[in-house]
Image (cartoon, rainbow, N blue to C red; front, side, top):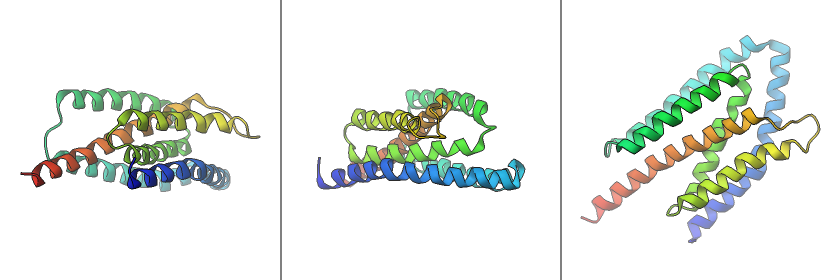
Length: 181
C-alpha cells in the first residue's frame, strides 16, 4: 500500500468507528423529533433531501459514464442490484430513518475502495465486514437491536458505493489512457 492508500484505509477505519456512533446518536435525536412532531412533518423534510442526494449521486455517476457506454454486464449489475434494492427499500420505507444506512455504507465502501484501488476484493470484504459488524455491535448495547433489514440496507449502500467507485475508476482509467497517448 502506498501512502495515499494507507491514509484512505485509516480514514475508512475512523469513519467506521466514529461515524457509525455519531449516526446512532443522530438517529436517537430524529426519533425524539418524530415523537414530538410526527412522521408526516419529518417526511416533508427528509424525502426532498433524500431525492436531492439521489439525483446528485445519479448525476455524478452518469457524468462519469459519459466517457464510454457501460458494457452489458455492468448494465445487468445495475438493473439486478437496483431491483433487489427497491425490493428491500419497499419493505422498510415505513421506517424512513433507516434509510440513513444507504449513504452511510456507500461512503464506507468508497473509502475502502480508495484504500484498495487496484484490489476490489479487500475493499468489498472490509465494507461487508463493516455492514455486518455495525449491526452486530448494536446488539451489545441496551435499547438497540440487531435488525436484518438494516443489514440489507447496509449492503444496498455497499452496492451503491461500488457503482460510484466504478464510475470514478472508469473516469480515472480514461484519463490515464488519454494522457498516455
